[in-house]
Length: 172
Image (cartoon, rainbow, N blue to C red; front, top):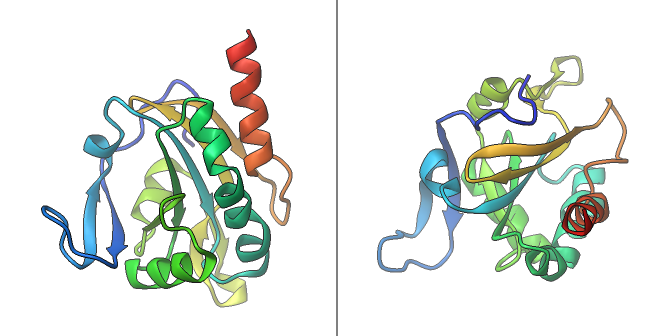
């Protein structure tokens, strides 16, 4: 499993874009992980699935609500990663009002989850292999902090915990 000090694995995530711009077509776009994290401070939080109760009611909304504070604490981008396709992540982001606050990135084949070792097997519940619930701080591609939740828990990967860690690090 990925741990602090490790570099994020190379690979791709997918992002649905509602409005085409120069260099960014409408629809699913490939996000090259190594290129996207280069020179940036990013909070990556993973969760089991779009439209699921804890994810929709607490996890993503917390990061949306705290986005400005996290940016003020030095974070360039917030990424929500889930084992869903880019279309589902785009629809979920629109429903939650994530635009401008959190990038909703699909890991449809669970390649990123597997590469990081942050998987959760929900096959017995009909959901297959999913992402574990976690939050990590990544600086220039290197994991600085990583908090992985125990199954069924939501205590350490929330936006308030990440903000607290950032403030403690700044005060140290």
